[in-house]
Length: 407
Image 1: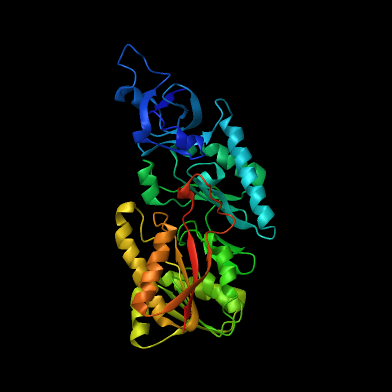
Image 2: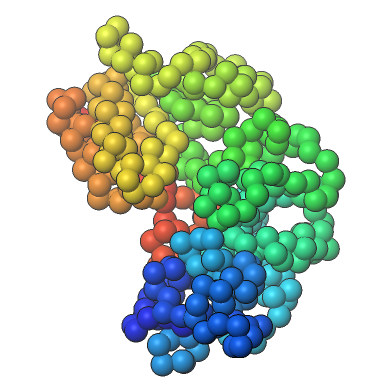
């Protein structure tokens, strides 16, 4: 097996449970297939001999074994750790971890057949995301090692979890970072639609038109919590997507729900999902940029009892973070300006580059500019099907805050 030799002390983070080896932490690369007559060990020529996705041994500067992982010369994440063992079966490891993840999800969601099944590093299958929609499994693969062993993943889903359809819905940005082709595949069955349940409400999922894999499971627990605040209230659901927050508001007796999204097809999805659940309470649908809509509400002195803002990630990289923080501050200021006294703003961020404390600071600054006294009454992260690793802050990304605007 080829070896990746770390610089002095660079094994400490891996030994503590982190699963990434960055390219600048590597002292040398030794390929077992390398012919020493052609060039010196550790040269670029030798590194090129290792196929991307190949399993390598990671050793410290003294030659002691640290971990095994998938190698990729094209990525800043040069090795993704998959085992602390030197010898193991990749096929057995993949099957074992998929089934372990499935059993955990069914233990916390016994009445659901749709959830995030695999959450990448958090489920010790680095670079693999699987969302389960009944018997349809939608994959996102961001690791050359998983790509190389995708057959084992598919076989486990078919033979152990009775998958009828298996397809991919990749994010081009992350595939490009890993040096992988961006084209999607249908491995089993045919793409179509599924009607799923989040445990309380139904949603129609179209895998060809939907965003990401088709549904955002990470907010399921927070949507249910949100509904408890909405009885007899006027509710504004911004960046509503398929309507999850607003639909839970309707299910809990909201007097009126206003759904806002810039995508016309998402507004249609909301209408269809309201009908699917048989809701008859008052609703308003607005296809608009959320910032523009909120500024219009401020100008017209239009207000709501409960406001939800769940935007897409404003910071996909660290270099965009200062601009993103300003955007979060502006968005929260506008939300606070349109919420009534003693009302609630539910504010989320899915930018993993944004630290929790920086998000709270942006909310605090927004309150000052809005001239509002606020209380932070509840905080949470992603749903239970999105576990995180204590040693990897990268596995924590969703921040969910409930803010009370006081008189």
